[in-house]
Length: 62
Figure 1 (cartoon, rainbow, N blue to C red):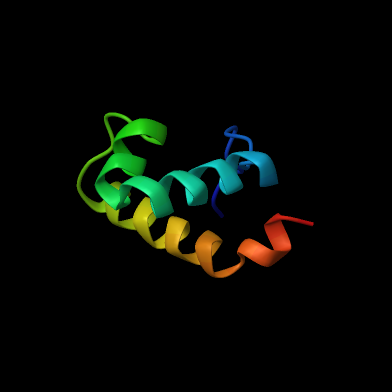
Figure 2: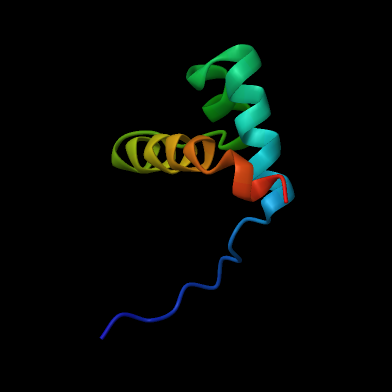
């Protein structure tokens, strides 16, 4: 059984800030600014998360 992560989940405000940055500056810039030092498989996961957040932008703005 996997242990629970001690890392808190991102807030709607954080997710919306990432999505706004993505739209203005692109994915590479968003990853570099909000997830510095992330590379490899983790960066792929973060990229997929960001695209998912962008798709749910309306929900984040509520």
